[in-house]
Amino acid sequence: MLRTVSHLALAGGLLLGTPLVASALVIDDFATPLTTDAVVGLGGLPNPVNATGGGAAAGAIGGNRGVALERTAGGGTASVDVGLSTANALSVSTGAGVAANATVIYDGDTNGTPNTSGLGGIDVTDGGANSVLRLLVESDQAGVVFRITFHDGAVNTFLDLVTTGGNTFGSPQLLSGNLAALNQDILKNVGAITIDVFGPTSFDVSMKQFTTAVPEPGSLALVAIGLAGLRYAGSRRRVA
Image 1 (cartoon, rainbow, N blue to C red):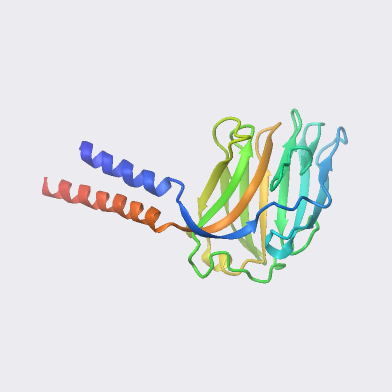
Image 2: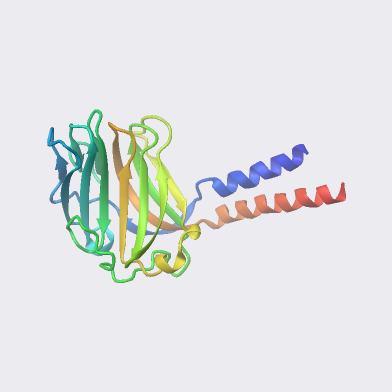
């Protein structure tokens, strides 16, 4: 029984762990700051209050990046790419008691409205090879959600990446997700990509790298070992 549990834990841990990666498709390296920041100032109630920004971004898919910001609660400030950003990073910040949703848009345009056919049908899986989504972030608290949505005209598929732990500024955490669980037809014909950032009030986050990637062969081998352990455990139970 103990051996069975250990094999289950091994396989589960390997499958759920963050995989190593061999190569990647860069969606945004965040090396270029916004030409126009998105800022919601003090007051302006009642909510929602909206702002937009964007600009050309050489390291972003489609060559441009748009931003939409909506404050949904509180009377304080919310901003994208103001104050927190260091080199190769894009920040979102909300003031005390402020809830907001910031959307970073990749559709070939620089405005704050997604054109869901703007990228013209990009294959973010690189022919099915890329099955890992990675976002390197810094955050001052847990529970900040990065909802990554891939659009193909009127249809879309998405996954949520969520920060954990305490303050990770100065020590970024790598958030990763499984692209194999999403609609592959959409991933192979992407017209736009959006990142919706939302969560608790008064959060500060900084995005530093956004890619899809190929798992390392060594990582796949570890998963295979875990699955072999499950099969072995099952055969032991049948013999018993």
